[in-house]
Length: 332
Ligand SMILES: *[C@@H]1O[C@H](CO)[C@@H](O)[C@H](O)[C@H]1NC(C)=O
Image (cartoon, rainbow, N blue to C red):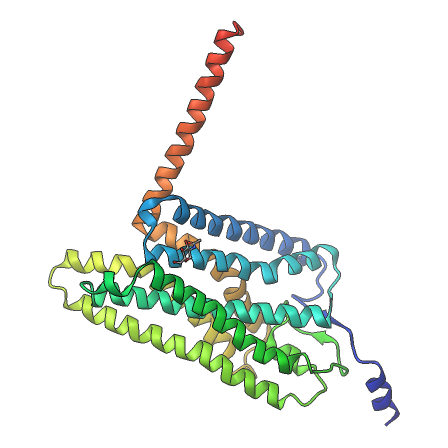
């Protein structure tokens, strides 16, 4: 009784994110690995955004979506990795309760937008492959912009609804969170308020922003694949498939890991495995997307090649201007 009273008087204001355990010899290694992953993620995604913005050949809805997805991936990785890197470097694993809830919300919003963008991208491929004659009428820059804006706005609205419940929670039992970032389940687990309503609301909203897009994406791909299989020539089939294969791989990785973490029964799977899968969809998907798109997509590859050639040409010109300058000054 006395304990309970004291607890009520001093609600917790700080959490400890246990991360990947205590091993001090492991921290520098993890720091280096995640630092490299973060740099590669940001560099790769920004490169794709620059290519899409700069190359006129990539000014089509499919690449607008890709550019927007890369923008989003940069933000998505930045909600988790910088803080994790800081705590690996300094060994300070505390995070304020407010900071933790903010991270949780931003991550939720980013994940929801990613879901909706991937769905919009598969709808775009569905129109291009299953209704090629009506594609130009149904999908253009304006529709693309509306879909992107819709994804952002609806994700913000949904997450605001969850936040109303989330920010009413109080925390007093334990302040240790056995994860490397503030994810919904481990945070709610340490709350001492009644969490039934927040869990119900979150469940419904996650179903709307995950299950519905996932099913729509699946339906698009069933239509796409049946259409492709009906193309008589092998070359035609290959050509049609090549425009959507990179996107299909990205979708499979994203939903595969998401399902492994949130849908698969968590009671039996060991904590380590759970964290490993979380690393996959929080840290590795944003890294893998630009790699898949730049390796598997002919147009992106071509655009990258041209950009590099241009860069080399600019450098050479610069050098020859410099040589001329030295020559005319009689320095050489
Ligand atoms: C995002 O989508 C909009 C709307 O189509 C487009 O105009 C813009 O260029 C895209 N952004 C990037 C970075 O590709």
